[in-house]
Image (tube, rainbow, N blue to C red; front, side, top):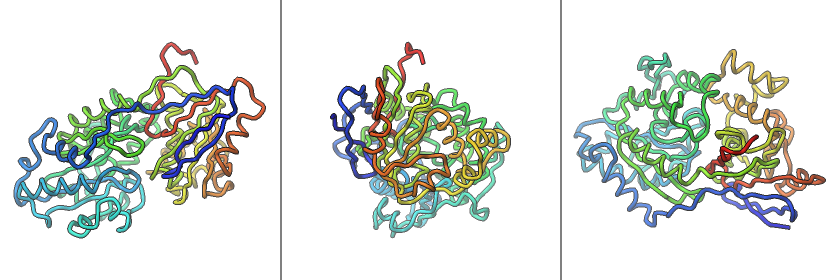
Length: 428
């Protein structure tokens, strides 16, 4: 028996696969780790791409909004925010004129304890933090429409700011191709109306993981962010262990594109064949709820070509201590009679923000079964969203391999930060 392991949050889950089974482990490439996180962040902010230094761009008296990621993304936000504050103070900005807006998108608000964990007690105490609420009409401002007729509705604190900065992480993303750049503004602090208009069947059907060129969703993000007036970004590229590989700062598009070059070099990995079974690991904090954890299945289905065979299975160990993560998609899937009902409803009638997860899961399940293991959500509840449950990863592996010959297994230890690409000469 050969022994392997994949993450379930901060823990590693070990399992065995019988000798003789064709197993391929797909991992992101090892790029040099930046040895000093704070130094790397300082150097990037002091030497921005495509614009002047931040302290030279701001003026005393300006109101500044710093748009930061929420608890669902893990990056060195405490250091980034502290260095940004130093730069702003050097440019004559007062602490009282700075508002930190947590880009929750359609996610839940972050607690003070979570904010302290992410940004440090000192920053949370001295700065004003605001959790974005996509449904709070009193906290939103309408800025017109995009060229494609999409309503531009944004957080009022962001709209009112004279200078806007955003932070983020560049990693594979189902709609945007790669996250980061302008996404935290155009989605993270957007109103529900805007999010719904971009997370629809027509847009989603045209996007693939890792593809930013000719990407309708990414093009809207850029247009919206420019209309809103995003001035400066700080983005990181990091390993599955959250070690920094690169920090980029500066112009929202120019700096992002530089970061994507590094992300692609690390995350995109060519493979020779499809798999009958994909075992997809989920690191912290994405394992905390099903909405985020099932993103581990995306790389097996939504890359340039599916990695898992039609009728295959994707196994995801995920604790999901926070439950489903968003109730809307669960209610919608539970009320449907079959997967095709979900897809047809999405195409004809659309869906509310956050409910696009139902369509994503339906598309995944049309390609392969999904089994969730080591999960706190009861099996009966998972069944409502067409997912199977097994108590442990080992039991799931044993069941799927038992009695089969010629089975091929692909293990993706960090499925959210690895994008397997089937070689072009492969015939599916």
